[in-house]
Image 1 (cartoon, helix red, strand yellow):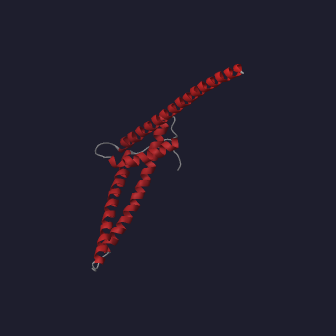
Image 2 (cartoon, rainbow, N blue to C red):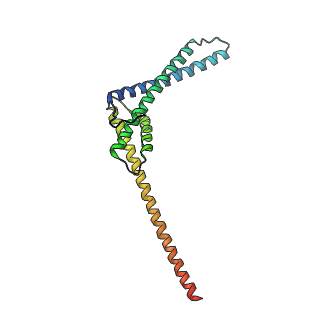
Length: 180
């Protein structure tokens, strides 16, 4: 993937891709349920000795394959858009203590987690996804910062306790040499 410096997302196209993804996801689930139901009814009819017409089942399987292809295509387009969004947020806000490549990957995953909650009637896709990614990156940054502070405190604690142990040992060594 070639990187462009001034890459941005067109909100209208972004919303169209999201809407297509949500629609395909809904139809995919619907077709899976219908196919499962047809297959179960075919088994029941065979067990009863009745003839089962598989023409409808085959048409739904064909339709299901078409929906899967469109679903995968929209999912790939969304992954690219979410990657661009995450990369631009990382470049803009420069979250220290956070690995940029890992953060971009997590940003894409968060967008896919939150995409079902997006409602075009309530707001813009770009704004919604930016808020989700930004909040997640802030949480990553806080976690990394708190972890580093904890490591520093623990390191300081180890130095203090080693210092106390060494001073006790030095005192014991002085007493043992004077008693001899």
